[in-house]
Amino acid sequence: MMKEIYIIRHGETELNRLGIVQGRGIDSDLNDTGRAQAKAFYHHYKNLKFDKIYTSVLKRTHQTVQHFIDLGLPWEQLTGLDELAWGVWEGKPNTEEARMAFKEIMEKWQGGNYEAGFEGGESPNQVKVRLLEALKVITDHTDENLVLVCMHGRAMRLLLCLLLEKELCEMGDFPHQNTTLYRMSYENGKFAVIDFNNTVHLKDLK
Image 1 (cartoon, helix red, strand yellow):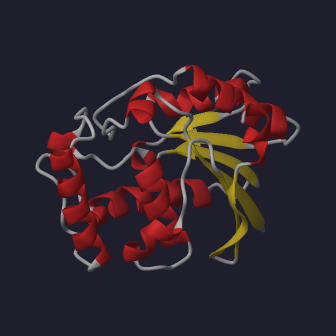
Image 2: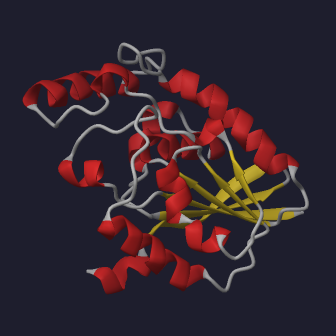
Protein backbone atom coordinates (compact mmCIF):
# COMPACT_ATOMS: atom_id res chain seq x y z
CA MET A 1 0.00 0.00 0.00
CA MET A 2 1.33 3.43 -0.95
CA LYS A 3 0.08 6.53 0.81
CA GLU A 4 0.54 10.01 -0.65
CA ILE A 5 0.65 12.91 1.79
CA TYR A 6 0.33 16.58 0.81
CA ILE A 7 1.90 18.67 3.58
CA ILE A 8 1.36 22.43 3.45
CA ARG A 9 2.10 25.34 5.70
CA HIS A 10 -0.81 27.59 6.65
CA GLY A 11 -1.51 30.83 4.80
CA GLU A 12 -0.23 34.23 5.88
CA THR A 13 -1.43 35.87 9.08
CA GLU A 14 -1.03 39.51 9.96
CA LEU A 15 1.64 38.55 12.50
CA ASN A 16 3.54 36.76 9.72
CA ARG A 17 3.38 39.92 7.63
CA LEU A 18 4.62 42.08 10.50
CA GLY A 19 7.42 39.69 11.44
CA ILE A 20 5.99 39.09 14.92
CA VAL A 21 6.84 35.78 16.56
CA GLN A 22 3.90 33.41 16.35
CA GLY A 23 4.05 29.97 17.90
CA ARG A 24 1.81 27.39 19.49
CA GLY A 25 0.46 29.87 22.01
CA ILE A 26 -0.94 32.38 19.51
CA ASP A 27 -4.13 31.41 17.67
CA SER A 28 -4.26 34.01 14.92
CA ASP A 29 -6.44 34.27 11.83
CA LEU A 30 -5.35 34.42 8.21
CA ASN A 31 -5.16 37.92 6.75
CA ASP A 32 -6.42 38.85 3.26
CA THR A 33 -3.22 37.55 1.65
CA GLY A 34 -3.49 34.30 3.57
CA ARG A 35 -7.08 33.82 2.50
CA ALA A 36 -6.08 34.44 -1.12
CA GLN A 37 -3.25 31.89 -0.79
CA ALA A 38 -5.68 29.35 0.67
CA LYS A 39 -8.13 29.94 -2.17
CA ALA A 40 -5.35 29.62 -4.75
CA PHE A 41 -4.21 26.31 -3.25
CA TYR A 42 -7.78 25.02 -3.27
CA HIS A 43 -8.40 25.95 -6.90
CA HIS A 44 -5.15 24.28 -7.97
CA TYR A 45 -5.81 21.01 -6.12
CA LYS A 46 -9.62 20.87 -5.76
CA ASN A 47 -9.95 17.95 -8.17
CA LEU A 48 -7.86 15.65 -5.98
CA LYS A 49 -9.90 13.15 -4.01
CA PHE A 50 -8.39 13.49 -0.54
CA ASP A 51 -9.44 10.71 1.82
CA LYS A 52 -8.69 12.76 4.93
CA ILE A 53 -7.60 16.19 6.10
CA TYR A 54 -5.38 16.61 9.16
CA THR A 55 -4.61 19.98 10.74
CA SER A 56 -3.20 21.34 13.96
CA VAL A 57 -5.70 22.67 16.49
CA LEU A 58 -4.79 26.28 15.60
CA LYS A 59 -7.34 28.04 13.41
CA ARG A 60 -4.87 29.38 10.85
CA THR A 61 -4.49 25.80 9.62
CA HIS A 62 -8.26 25.20 9.61
CA GLN A 63 -8.83 28.39 7.62
CA THR A 64 -6.18 27.44 5.07
CA VAL A 65 -7.96 24.20 4.13
CA GLN A 66 -11.52 25.36 4.87
CA HIS A 67 -12.55 25.06 1.21
CA PHE A 68 -11.69 21.35 1.33
CA ILE A 69 -13.43 20.91 4.70
CA ASP A 70 -16.53 22.54 3.20
CA LEU A 71 -16.65 19.74 0.64
CA GLY A 72 -17.51 17.42 3.52
CA LEU A 73 -14.15 15.64 3.56
CA PRO A 74 -13.22 13.86 6.81
CA TRP A 75 -11.15 16.20 9.01
CA GLU A 76 -9.19 15.56 12.19
CA GLN A 77 -7.28 18.00 14.39
CA LEU A 78 -4.06 16.72 15.97
CA THR A 79 -2.29 18.69 18.70
CA GLY A 80 0.92 17.00 17.59
CA LEU A 81 0.85 19.13 14.43
CA ASP A 82 0.84 22.42 16.39
CA GLU A 83 3.65 24.90 15.89
CA LEU A 84 6.69 24.84 18.18
CA ALA A 85 6.04 26.99 21.25
CA TRP A 86 8.41 29.96 21.34
CA GLY A 87 7.56 30.75 24.96
CA VAL A 88 8.40 34.24 26.17
CA TRP A 89 9.03 35.45 22.60
CA GLU A 90 5.55 34.75 21.28
CA GLY A 91 3.79 37.93 20.20
CA LYS A 92 7.01 39.95 20.40
CA PRO A 93 8.15 42.18 17.52
CA ASN A 94 11.20 41.52 15.37
CA THR A 95 13.67 43.66 17.34
CA GLU A 96 17.46 43.41 17.47
CA GLU A 97 17.14 41.66 20.83
CA ALA A 98 14.75 39.11 19.34
CA ARG A 99 17.00 38.52 16.34
CA MET A 100 19.96 37.87 18.64
CA ALA A 101 17.95 35.49 20.82
CA PHE A 102 16.76 33.52 17.80
CA LYS A 103 20.25 33.46 16.31
CA GLU A 104 21.56 31.94 19.54
CA ILE A 105 18.85 29.27 19.75
CA MET A 106 19.30 28.35 16.07
CA GLU A 107 23.03 27.95 16.63
CA LYS A 108 22.30 25.59 19.51
CA TRP A 109 19.98 23.52 17.33
CA GLN A 110 22.44 23.47 14.45
CA GLY A 111 25.06 22.27 16.92
CA GLY A 112 22.88 19.32 17.90
CA ASN A 113 21.42 20.66 21.15
CA TYR A 114 17.81 19.63 20.57
CA GLU A 115 16.90 20.09 24.23
CA ALA A 116 17.35 23.87 23.96
CA GLY A 117 14.26 26.06 24.00
CA PHE A 118 13.10 29.45 25.17
CA GLU A 119 11.61 29.94 28.64
CA GLY A 120 8.03 28.71 28.58
CA GLY A 121 8.54 27.21 25.13
CA GLU A 122 9.43 23.88 23.58
CA SER A 123 12.61 22.23 22.39
CA PRO A 124 12.89 20.36 19.08
CA ASN A 125 12.97 17.08 21.03
CA GLN A 126 9.69 17.93 22.75
CA VAL A 127 8.07 18.75 19.41
CA LYS A 128 9.52 15.55 17.95
CA VAL A 129 7.63 13.46 20.51
CA ARG A 130 4.25 14.89 19.59
CA LEU A 131 5.01 14.93 15.86
CA LEU A 132 5.73 11.20 16.01
CA GLU A 133 2.42 10.65 17.83
CA ALA A 134 0.57 12.57 15.09
CA LEU A 135 2.47 10.71 12.40
CA LYS A 136 1.46 7.38 13.88
CA VAL A 137 -2.20 8.40 13.70
CA ILE A 138 -1.80 9.33 10.03
CA THR A 139 0.15 6.25 8.96
CA ASP A 140 -1.98 3.81 10.96
CA HIS A 141 -5.02 4.70 8.84
CA THR A 142 -4.15 2.39 5.97
CA ASP A 143 -7.49 3.10 4.26
CA GLU A 144 -6.47 6.73 3.71
CA ASN A 145 -4.37 6.72 0.56
CA LEU A 146 -4.43 10.43 -0.28
CA VAL A 147 -4.04 12.76 2.69
CA LEU A 148 -3.82 16.54 3.12
CA VAL A 149 -1.94 17.87 6.16
CA CYS A 150 -1.88 21.57 7.07
CA MET A 151 0.54 22.68 9.76
CA HIS A 152 3.20 25.27 10.65
CA GLY A 153 6.61 26.31 9.40
CA ARG A 154 9.00 25.22 12.15
CA ALA A 155 7.03 22.11 13.05
CA MET A 156 6.82 21.21 9.36
CA ARG A 157 10.60 21.50 9.00
CA LEU A 158 11.08 19.19 11.97
CA LEU A 159 8.52 16.73 10.60
CA LEU A 160 10.27 16.60 7.22
CA CYS A 161 13.54 15.78 8.99
CA LEU A 162 11.78 12.90 10.74
CA LEU A 163 10.12 11.63 7.56
CA LEU A 164 13.39 11.63 5.64
CA GLU A 165 15.47 10.29 8.55
CA LYS A 166 17.60 13.42 8.72
CA GLU A 167 19.14 14.97 11.80
CA LEU A 168 16.99 17.75 13.25
CA CYS A 169 19.85 20.19 12.68
CA GLU A 170 19.03 19.91 8.96
CA MET A 171 15.63 21.56 9.46
CA GLY A 172 16.92 24.65 7.65
CA ASP A 173 17.13 22.66 4.41
CA PHE A 174 13.36 22.94 3.97
CA PRO A 175 12.04 26.34 2.76
CA HIS A 176 8.60 27.09 4.13
CA GLN A 177 6.80 30.13 2.78
CA ASN A 178 3.06 30.33 3.41
CA THR A 179 1.10 27.49 1.73
CA THR A 180 4.25 25.88 0.32
CA LEU A 181 3.66 22.21 -0.53
CA TYR A 182 5.78 19.16 0.22
CA ARG A 183 4.30 16.05 -1.39
CA MET A 184 5.49 12.79 0.11
CA SER A 185 5.03 9.13 -0.67
CA TYR A 186 4.85 6.51 2.07
CA GLU A 187 5.44 2.86 1.22
CA ASN A 188 6.83 -0.06 3.18
CA GLY A 189 7.47 2.19 6.16
CA LYS A 190 9.57 4.69 4.17
CA PHE A 191 8.88 8.25 3.09
CA ALA A 192 10.20 9.87 -0.09
CA VAL A 193 9.82 13.35 -1.59
CA ILE A 194 7.64 13.61 -4.68
CA ASP A 195 7.39 17.41 -4.72
CA PHE A 196 9.75 19.78 -2.87
CA ASN A 197 8.67 23.28 -1.81
CA ASN A 198 6.08 23.61 -4.56
CA THR A 199 4.38 27.02 -4.77
CA VAL A 200 3.05 26.84 -8.34
CA HIS A 201 -0.44 27.58 -7.03
CA LEU A 202 0.73 31.05 -5.96
CA LYS A 203 1.92 32.16 -9.39
CA ASP A 204 -1.28 34.07 -10.14
CA LEU A 205 -1.01 36.03 -6.88
CA LYS A 206 2.36 37.61 -7.68
